[in-house]
Image 1 (tube, helix red, strand yellow):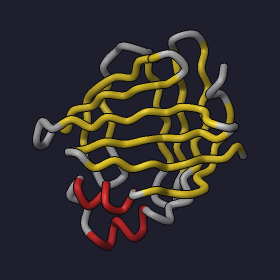
Image 2 (cartoon, helix red, strand yellow):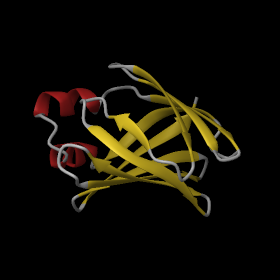
Image 3 (cartoon, rainbow, N blue to C red):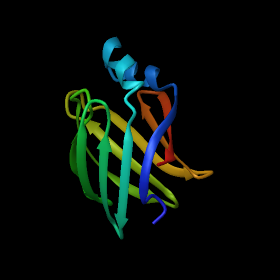
Image 4 (cartoon, rainbow, N blue to C red):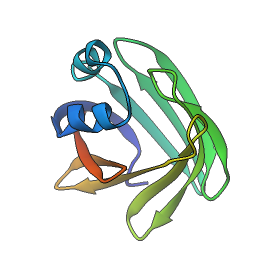
Length: 132
């Protein structure tokens, strides 16, 4: 499957502004911008197994496309939502449990890189990952 493999964050675009919009304090934003996040994705049909390893935590997530699940961001923000496939793109629609606001995220392979986008309250950001 296209997304299968290990991906290491290479660069960010507007990520700190996005985190600020999410309400993450300055110290956590500065740390998160240099978290050395590595994501391992394994897709089998509609089921995904995701392992996130960063300077702050290691987390295993299993989800099925179109099925709601609970998820906590590294700063403790709790979300509920699901991922779906839209063509060759994974799209996640999540709702924050603390304020009911939507967080939209996508994952797509572009020129051999995994591009993960975020949108929260009109602020867009990207994290670009390379295989490895």
